[in-house]
Image 1 (cartoon, rainbow, N blue to C red):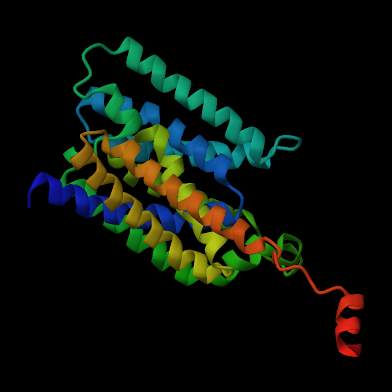
Image 2: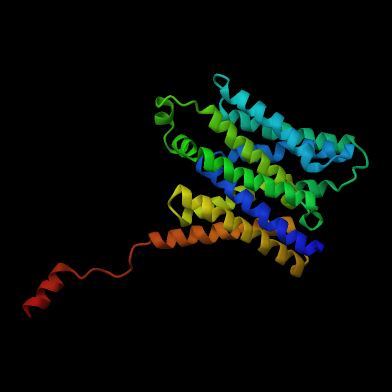
Length: 280
């Protein structure tokens, strides 16, 4: 399999996985959390590249620490989820920038860690993305009822005797795994768009939780394929092209939803005029 065919396969798998997990992120309103994760895995990727390890492996190790820190800060009194996300977002990205500056001669281009390089993905990257996608589908299938309950009825979920933090940690872990698998394609900065845009577009198209889970991966995979094709024939970077394709899907869905809400332009017949016509 050539590099272009490998890039297409990676785009489909990574796009589908990001779209599926992104549906949970968008529906649970954890987009800022996901953004913090994408940026905070950057120091792990830089450290792994400097030590000669796999970049996704370094990002995965960093994501484990990040999820633990975010969960702990979110449970501290008078702090909360937004505070946790803000601290991790800025602190993690700053740590990555500092490591990049103090470590000379990185074996990879820093730009590839930030915006991705899907044309250079390996078979291991594709296998990782497949594992993440299959695991995400399996876990959502196993805990889907509780995820839906927790997502749309927080008070009822707690009143039923369930603890919310295990579901929150599960979604955070799936988000972190999806971010790690998306790094080779779109990098640390652009991964948030591949998570959020397909899911947000699907939410505008279909009204149900299950529908969003089905449509978002399709949009994500289509965005990946379109981005890779545009990258090849227009000679532009693949990562930004994939993200722009996902953004375009969202804009089309948004415009379509607004058009459907427009009232009919046909003016109603005035009562007097209709009555006059009947009498005549």
